[in-house]
Image: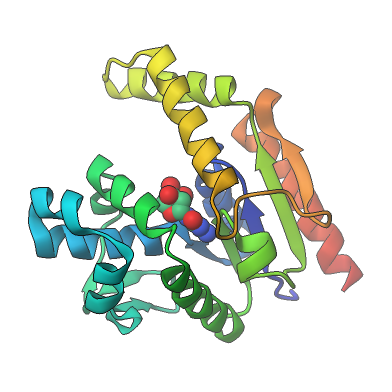
Length: 229
Ligand code: DC
């Protein structure tokens, strides 16, 4: 089957990674979660500096002076390594690491390093599905399929509440909603490469869809692209 590249952008908590992983399995593509690279750099500094200093000195100059993109490696299966040690996904999902990642993601030079890294990888390993906040217009502007996955902030907060309940965490709906709205504002108003839908991206509003329905919709679009190539 012809290999195509797929780019999926959308706000935080909309289900991009879950959907992308399922699509990757179904069509034998490599799934790259571009946010995990920003998170990996954040993890590097968290481990180097410890919790207190990490919060204090993570400005752009410090990050640039103390970081080299060669410390990251993505193998052909999509596994990410930091200084030759495989990174576990659970280590990237902690709150402090998310905080550092969103700070680092504002730095222009760091963004351009990550973009080049992801572009080189996708060129070598054709047949990737990549999710993030700038994949449709910066990282993979020539992707054969571009999706902008959306759901309202209220729906995303409700889904997160339900997930937390299943995991046994107590959460407050109003707080979750506020957090999601703040993240959306940051992502969509940041100076460098703010999140937006491009004209050539297909909007999928998943507010009233379940995961399988989103996967089915994207699968139809992939088959159309493959058959038209
Ligand atoms: O999707 P995520 O929450 O794992 O992303 C981590 C951080 O990196 C988040 O603050 C958004 C940012 N990010 C970005 O700016 N560009 C991307 N392509 C992916 C993530």
